Length: 216
Ligand code: AMP
Image (cartoon, rainbow, N blue to C red):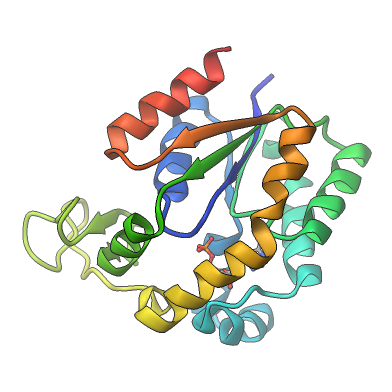
């Protein structure tokens, strides 16, 4: 049986990068509500159109929309054998909805990994972040630059900056994290499933800490 994991932490902490690696290594689906929502926005679906205003401003998309996305995704066959939830739950209501969903179908969550780093590190990471819209590869202007400026090493695509990685939405996202998401840490800590991951180091250092946290 594969692991059932939640990755929790502020924007810019590196959850997504670690989630992609770990999910691939463990052969479990990487379920990122941010990625799913961005795909809906790009495809200009009704859901994407509804979500976009919230996302561009760094606000949370309403719980009912996000919960429906996750419930549908967890219903798919490939989620029966474990999964990694990245960026969900983000509110107390989402955490409750997830628990109800898991009681019906899947078993309980095995572990919640809580990634943390100081605010100045988060802001630096978010503002320098670039991505390839074609293949999904992640870059950073200084920490993980592409070989040729603005061009994806892997597929040659043109790198872009997320709309919400600009100063005002970054400020808003950190504020929303502190007001809504941070309290989930105590919820999962008291449930005994929380492991803290210091995420100030390099991608490889954090990946090593993630691997250690799953050994015990
Ligand atoms: P992320 O890629 O996780 O940084 O998410 C980008 C944006 O998608 C967030 O700022 C929210 O607008 C929206 N979003 C992603 N996940 C959630 C969630 N669990 N609840 C509400 N909004 C979300």
